Length: 155
Image 1 (tube, rainbow, N blue to C red):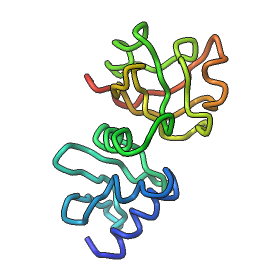
Image 2 (image 1 turned 45 degrees about the horizontal axis):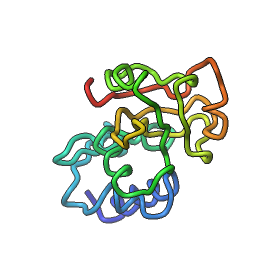
Image 3 (image 1 turned 120 degrees about the vertical axis):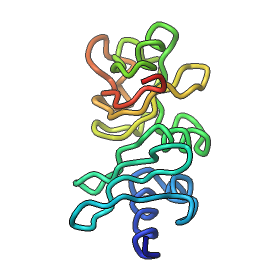
């Protein structure tokens, strides 16, 4: 991987997740392995702890569990988080979607389409996924999907 490609991945993560996210997700070029598409674009970013992210065709990162854990450990709540309680914890952990009626609170900066971390109210990471509702209103809805879960910690 070239130095400019590595810097580009870090810049993209900083843009999408906020300052410092690039260094958190991709600490060094030697600590990550990148697969490429047939055209040479970056595709999957892996490390020893698993898949950090996929570089999607729209230029945004799709988080893997390893990337979710890194963001959870490095950024203070409520950043990127959707918090659920005991009722939905086993289902979300299995990879099922998080529904609005079970959301206790969420980062008000989350917009529909953003990558999010679904966490238990005790702070454990349950899943990573894509927000379907704005964070500022997730806990207010009685019906509907709050987060389309991509991968649960037990899946």
